[in-house]
Image 1 (cartoon, helix red, strand yellow):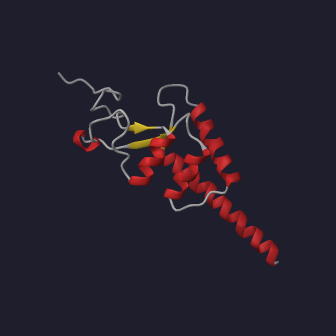
Image 2 (cartoon, helix red, strand yellow):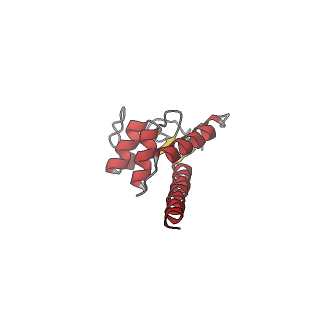
Image 3 (tube, helix red, strand yellow):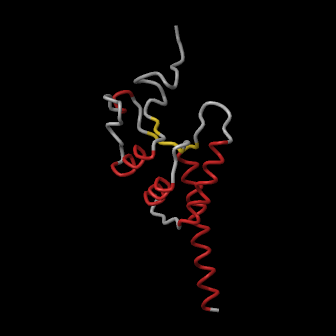
Length: 130
C-alpha cells in the first residue's frame, strides 16, 4: 500500500521542521540551521528534511529587520512598518491551512521595500543637490 505522508507527521512530515516563531527564525538566520529546534531531538538531515521558516501571525518588526539584515539590506522603520503590514495582510487573507507567507515571498517584500527606501533617499539627495 502506498499512503501519502501527512505534512505534520512527526519526524518525516514536510512541515516537521517549519518554523514561524521569531526567536527560532532569528536563531536559524544567525547560525544557518536553527538546530536543535525546541522540542526536537532529530536532526532534519536524518530524515532528508531541512529547517524552513515562514511569516505567520507571530511575525514582528525585530524579525523583519533580522531577515533584511541576513539579506544584506537595511530597512528603515517606516518602510519596515509598511512591509510588516503587507505581510500581516497576506497572512490574514489566508482562509485555510497554511496560514503563512513563504520565506521567498517575505524576502521579495523586504527587497521591494528596501528598493523603495533607497530610491527615496536618492530622490532626496537629488532634491538637496538640485
